[in-house]
Every structure is written in C-alpha cells, then in structure tokens.
Length: 139
Image (cartoon, rainbow, N blue to C red; front, side):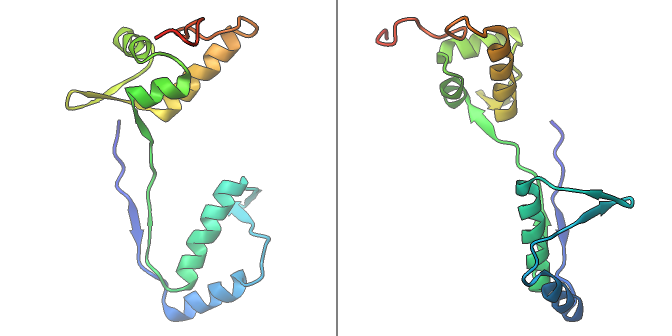
C-alpha cells in the first residue's frame, strides 16, 4: 500500500478569508468546476468541501489526508458474518488481501465490503454465505 503524505495548506490571508466567508454565508449552492465542466458532488463530498472552505474562511490552516480503515480479522469476520477461522483461511489462500502489522493481520474495510458484494451476487437465494454455521447456537 502506498502511503500518501497529507497536504497541509496555510490559512488564507485575512482579506481572502473574509471574501470567502461572505460568499459562503447563507449559500447552499456550491458548484464545482473541473476543467470548465460542472460537477455535482455527492452529499458527503459536498459537505467535506464546504467544511474545508469554511475553515479557510476563518483563516485556519487545513490538512487534507485520506483514511483507509484497517480491521482486525475478528472485526472483519464479524462484519462479514463468518467465523474468524474461515476468514483467516481465506487470507491464507489469497482470496481476501491481508496486510501484516508485525504478526497481526489487518484487512481493509473496502476488501471485506467487496467480498460481501461478490458473495451476495453469487449466492442470491442460496440462504447462507460461505463460512456461516447453519445452527446459530453452535459454538
């Protein structure tokens, strides 16, 4: 996995911050142009951009970075609804990518979600996902 350093940008000069604050006050229509083309952002992205602009308008420095959620095998198995052992076996076979932090396995949330989507498509109407016990009371 490539690590990308966060981008840190100093706060805007007071005059620019004040102009941006004025533009944002009471505005609910934020339009993004990329190479002259208008793009509508999904609500989560729009909210992040407005938050960043709001911080700039207050003269604050801003750091932008991405977060890739890494899960323990226990948490990943819980999310997937499968046993911890079954998940470890899948990582051993290379069916689900795994990273090691020392001797501990870590699995990207995105990889578990992608695996779940594949299972849903493959087992539509089958009843259970691979690795699930038929008897919920079995230990």
